[in-house]
Length: 150
Image (cartoon, rainbow, N blue to C red; front, side):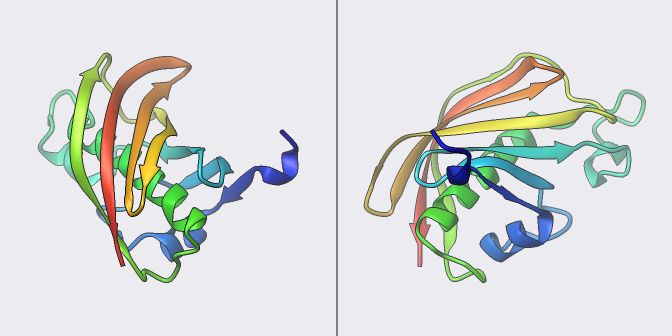
């Protein structure tokens, strides 16, 4: 695979692909995007995140459902770039989440690396396998299906 096939996106380019905005935009950067196949989303987890105020005040931990949401957003960028959907022309909706596993807590200061890979796609329905890592340690994984609505 040649390096020309790998695409990296900054947060402004991500915002061109997804309708999410603060506080629900959960990815800061995309690395190694291969159209129609895979990408790595990067989330820099800071104590300033809105959810740490209540989850939990004495032991801040990123909610697992938001880790899965960040995987979904990473997959949404793969779909949007593959289908050439930009400037929020379409929405990506979760249809199902299977085999979700949370292995380790994600805390302020962690860099979350969200690896998503297409399992299959048919029309406007895409299925992905996702794995989230901090410091090369698997913290969460899921298989999820999403529908693109234009």
